[in-house]
Length: 114
Length: 114
Figure 1 (cartoon, rainbow over the protein chains, first blue to last red):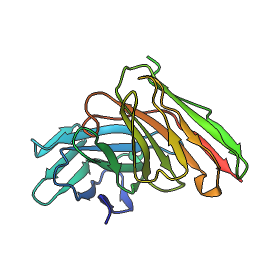
Figure 2: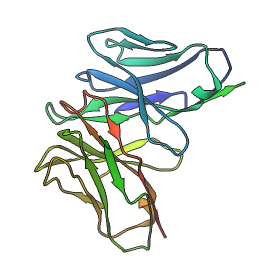
Figure 3: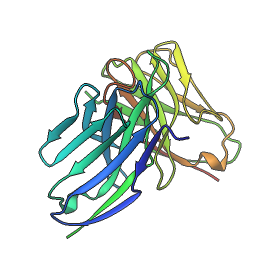
Figure 4: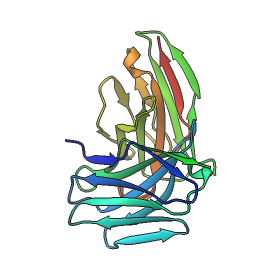
């Protein structure tokens, strides 16, 4: 199965509403969970990340929550704005200790309707 | 700092041709990565390196080769280009241990194989 599963693949919300994107991972040793935003034709850029010793992290309108027992983490965007429209990717590390690399989810295309 | 620099930005190859995608970083990061992103899809890890002289296969290594002779450079080689290798290729680097630190992406190389 996939190392990192991401849902939904597309999400459309009205401006001002909240958006939630969920990811599950398979490696219980994973301890770092970033979220990247990719605008059309651009490179992915880190928007927020969380480490396994905390359950939630916030940065203005963006938050990430982590449930290590269930092996899933979520991105929450509140008061969405049209400029939040983009593709969002979650990621988690895989590989042997000392030689790990980030594996990405399949992405969520978020469309914020004005 | 220029960050992660990739060349070329665009390239069209004929089937069977070979080429090298260049990637260099000036942040003294030990960890470097190559991802490919097919149209409308997520990022797939091709190869990565935890330091000079060390490389590891990722999720989709077939048809590619890498080398890491210096900390700064991590070129990706395509020996016999195939249409399935049409994609956008992103190089990235990270500080600290791999898989537990943010990735810094280059702007990508858009490759078309016809």
